[in-house]
Amino acid sequence: MKVLNVEVVLNREKNIQQAKSEDSILEELDDETTSHGYAILSHRWGAEVTHKEMIGLMKMEEQKRDKIRECYGYQKIIKSCEQAKEDGYKWLWVDTCCIDKRSSAELSEAINAMYRWYQNAQVCYAYLNDVDGLLFPTERDDSKFEQSNGWPEWFSRGWTLQELIAPKQVEFFNKDWVPIGNKQRLAPTLQDITRIPRDVLTHGLVGKRLCVAQIMSWATDRKTTRVEDRAYSLMGLFGVKMPMLYGEGKNAFRRLQLKIIKGTGDHSIFAW
Image 1 (cartoon, rainbow, N blue to C red):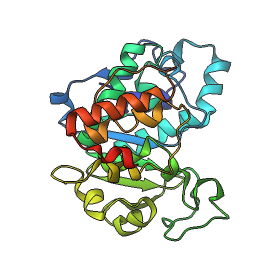
Image 2: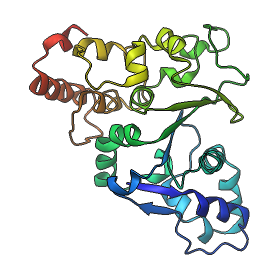
Image 3: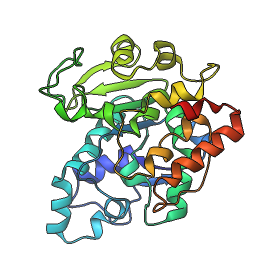
Image 4: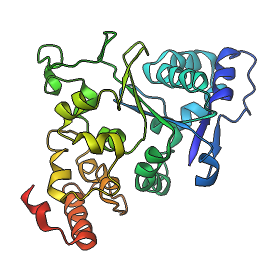
């Protein structure tokens, strides 16, 4: 698991003109090391900074470097690091820059481990980029969130389903990084938005006897950019592992169904 060293990232940004190109902002950690505590980010993708850009920032020409530093995705990483430092965490995981997506092996490993990484995090920062108020939205607003069923877009995305359920603690932030509530306190509202039972939201899936169709139903209205991610984003919820084959289209979901049936014997999946 590659994670950002929060202190190194922030020091590099603060002293951008003096920072050394060889300063390593990413560290490779195992499960035992990360048990000491790390924060993790959940967000809606936009104009993001890649793994290559993040580690190669100091080797770029100044004009290109400054352009990246001004972009939405880079500022999101910096703000996440600042929050992690404030909360006392040394490491932060961000999917946009902690996975080298040029490597299919690294991407496949990360997607298969992602649910566990969110589950093991001490805190998950859920960044709601379309919420500008100081309070978490508690009522549906179709005029403000018309593209996402009346709620912040974060709740309409496929990957954020596991990112809501897996972590023990989820802290929500508005677009200006002002905290607007946490999963425990907002559980009744979150249940209304997602149809996920409050007990699952507050205590996770462990020990729950839920049929496959019920878990699948939580993903009904969620969207992913790639059709394969409709399946890949659900793997962790069912404890399924399988190789990533981008380009296989809807066959990814058929492979997921077969894996789930083989592991559970629950044929309610066909009712979904």
